[in-house]
Length: 355
Image 1: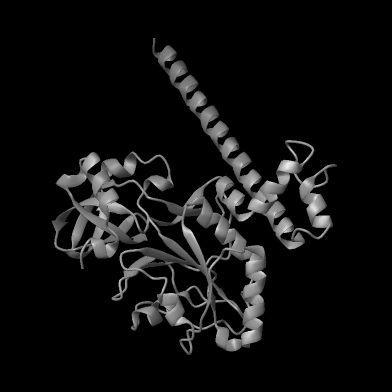
Image 2: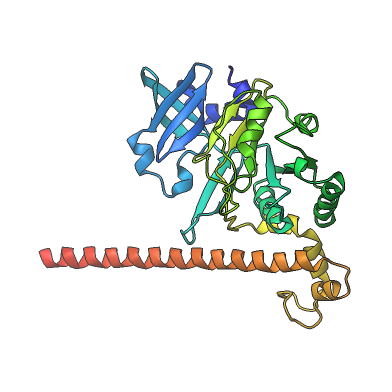
């Protein structure tokens, strides 16, 4: 395996030279386990950890390596490396961290394409597809939709589901396949290019790990069936992992996501809901929220049937989430600022008492 097989390119080499990391080896993060990592390069696969300075200088979680990142490393023992620096990310898909207000979680870094995987039987949901699309567009990652388990429905039903998606998202590429009988895999493989990095996004149980196994022709990922009691997928994939297929594609499998929280996805929203932003130019008020204002061009288009009411409702829901996230971030910054002032006052009082 070469670095180019892992996705290395001229821009990464240029960044490496500019940062002075050419004195180190280079590797790509393939998995992460609470600040302990596995990295890969042309020499093989290694366990890795951060040097102390890198760990203590990090300002936020995004300053730590994520799966898909390129890092500067040195080998200090057999099968073990130290991470000395993180190269600039080409992009990263992020969502609002579950249970942590105002924080973002990096799902994967340095991606070319994201496969949004849904099962046609129980998981199919166009609103959720739009959420994933927003994450992709915000990160400048090309999205594709993969509808799995097509062996469970008729061809007519499959075409209706594809029409539902394309009616809301006209330019989106949609591929139907079956992990069971391998239908559609030839079509999917046409979109996989050697040296490019792909990530799989979707809920538990939609067949992401089985998809990778079928593409590789082997068993790279552990798989499981749907729970009979809850009809939900079991979290077989418990951490993100980067895998290189013999055919040349680089895949990052992700644990199933039951929550797709929208963070600072302003630009992503503008692409996903571009028709709404275009209609908004005709609103009477520049600060129109498109809820109940008079002279709202968006509401008029929905009421007249010229625009999808389902897409409109999804837009309003995601816009509220985005605004809540932004207000939470502002509140968190103010709290940090107030805490800093308190610490400064305490130090001043302490110094005065010593005089």
